[in-house]
Length: 92
Image (cartoon, rainbow, N blue to C red; front, side):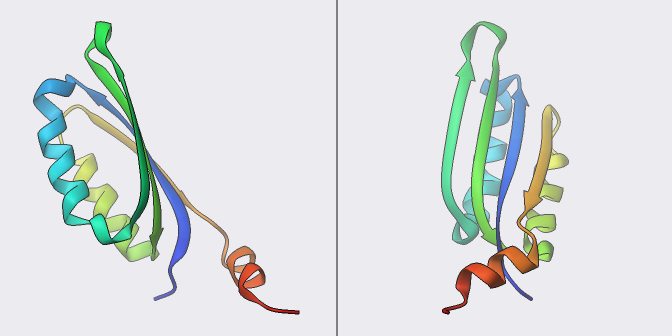
């Protein structure tokens, strides 16, 4: 299946309790991850994490499915369009 550039955005509530579970899933899918940025909101015990991925729709779905099952984690994701990636890879 074709891999595409994409992102996963997460809001992690009760970060001290939830972060180890999130990190375990991200480690499991580490070969898909290009980069990661996490910003803690210390006063509210939340974090926002954005992960840049190079993944197929199936791989992204598997990762976001596991993350979404973790209590206190909200997840959204997106992948680039097929045509966009194909056009970028072509040499004129």
